[in-house]
Length: 430
Ligand code: HAM
Image 1 (tube, rainbow, N blue to C red):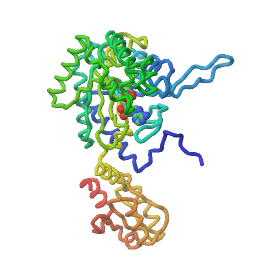
Image 2: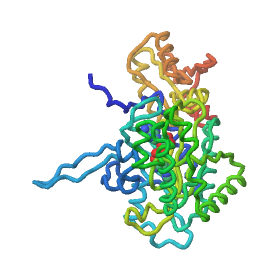
Image 3: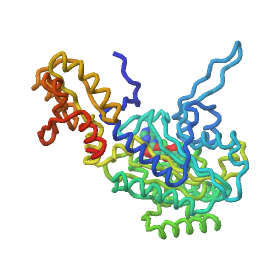
Image 4: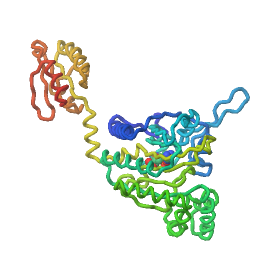
C-alpha cells in the first residue's frame, strides 16, 4: 500500500471544521485590522531563501527541499526550493510588484497569507515536514513600535476568540545588525571558554552561527547557556529606546508579556523586536505557537529599496492542537448536516429527490443516501450522520404532501409541509 511521506499527513474530514475555524477567524481578524491576502508560489528560487533567511540558519543549511529543475538541452536546471517560510517570498513579491511605489508618507502595505510550508525536520508531535502557516507582514517606511503592538493586540484578540488561553508572550530586542557583529564576537569568545562542556551541535554553532546556541535543548548545555552574555546587554541606544516604546505600547493595551533576553529566533533577517507566543499546555516539546519580529534590512538583502517590516507566522497545525476539547466538539457537531432524509418505498424515494433539491435550494444542508432501509435502520443511520433532524417520507406523507420532521436530540416529531419546513430552518435558524 502506498502511504503518505514521513512528516506529512492527510487532514481528514473530522478535523476540517477545526482547521476551517482557525482559518476563518484569522481572516476575520485580518479584515478588522486592515490586512489583505496574498498568495505566492510554493516553489521559489533557492537563492531567495539562502539570501533572505540566511545560509547559516538550520532552515537553509539542513532543512530545505531543494532540487535542480530540468535544464534545457545541455544547460543545467535552476536550483528550486519548496518554501520553508513565507516572509522572504512576500518581500520578493513586494519588491517585484513595486508595492512601495505610489504610496503616501506613512502608508503601510499590510498583507496576510495562509498555506503550506516545507522543512525537513525530524518529525514529532506538532512538527511536520509539510505544515501550514498563517502569517502577516506589515511593510513600509515606518518602524513605529505602535505597529508591532497593534499586530500583537490582534493576535491577543484572535487567541481569546479561539478560547486558547494558556499562552505566554515572550519578547526581546535583537538590536541592529551593526551591533550584532560586535555582540557575536563577545558571545563566541565566551562560548570558546566553555567549549568542552557543550554538545557537538553547539560546538559547531560556535563557528557557524553562535546565536543558535540559545536554541539548544540539550540539558547538559543549559547551565553554560544561562551564563552566556545576552544580546540585550549590548543593545545600541536607538534599539533600546525602540524596545522601551514597544513595551509601553503593550502596557497601554494591558497585554502581558515576559522579556526573554535569550530569545533570538532561528532566521537571520530579524532586527530589533523579536517575539514568540508559546502554548503552555498541549504542545509538548514543540511549544512555540507563533514566531515573529522586525526585519528592516530584508528588502535590501533581496535587492529592493530600503523598507521596514514587521510580521509573524503561526503554525495552523499547532493552533488546531490547542483548541479546547469542548470547542472542538462544538465545531465538529456544527459541521453535521441539518437534515437526514429517510424514505420508505419507491414512490417516497422518487419524491425524496425532488424534496431534497428544493430544501437544498433553500439553503438547508441535507444528506440523502440512495439505499432503501427499514425505518429502524434508517433512523440509526440518521443519528450516526450527526444531523439534527430526520425528515421521514413514507407513502402516507407522499399522499398528503406533509412530512415527518423529527428532532433527533429531543425525539419530538411534527408533520409539516415543505413550505413550513423551509420556514422553520430559514427564519428560526434552528
Ligand atoms: P518560524 O518561527 O520559523 O517563523 O515559524 C513560525 C511558526 O510556524 C512556528 O512558531 C510554528 O508554530 C510553525 N512551524 C514552524 N516549523 C514547523 C513545523 N516543522 N511543523 C509545524 N509547525 C511549524 C517564520 O517562519 C517567520 N517567517 C515568521 C515571521 C513572519 N517573521 C516575520 N514575519
